[in-house]
Length: 295
Image (cartoon, rainbow, N blue to C red):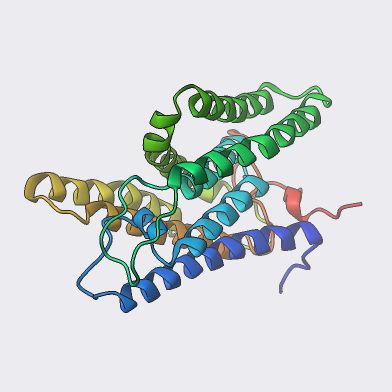
């Protein structure tokens, strides 16, 4: 028997489904661009498709996914912090293009002025982001928060201020390196989020559904670590121009699988209740935070 979903649970569902849809949209756009180009010709990275007709979808989907990750509340505070950081970094990955334009595109390249785009877009992001961060700080600090919430605020502030300092102090270095730095840090955060979910999976209290004996997050986490390392090792030994493309593709595919798995697991609960270390799964009589009625 299904559990009636309140508005909070529906919001969690829609946020996760939106990220899955955005990944599908990005993949579809890239396939269309690849199909219209010589099928034997691929850009050396997904990020290089910024310089193709897929640019608008590439930028739009990353910004949307970033917003969804920031909005979505993690089931634990570490997960929430990691999602926030990954969500803050995603727009930088989108708005600061990789320096390598590549050569495979379906139409002649019209690059415009990437440096001018970065200057405009990132400045706008910082200007709008500053009051958002300040408002978040007000919400957190007014309730005499625990240390873990202050830590999350401090991490977000450090990422934001660090980006501003780099942007104004070393614009050339920012233009050349911000994409790679943000992308690497974002993927690391996502991988740790999957690992956190793998550890928390069987600690979910009974709320009408029992977790499967198979832990899907553990499989995804292992794949996220092992497959990129194998692809990188192959590139190092044999040389491979498209290693980054396939590493990014694998991680994005596994990222989609993660959200599919979490959507399925938490369809009725919204969040997995954070269980204390002494509490055994299935012993709580309290409903999960997202399944409580809101007033």
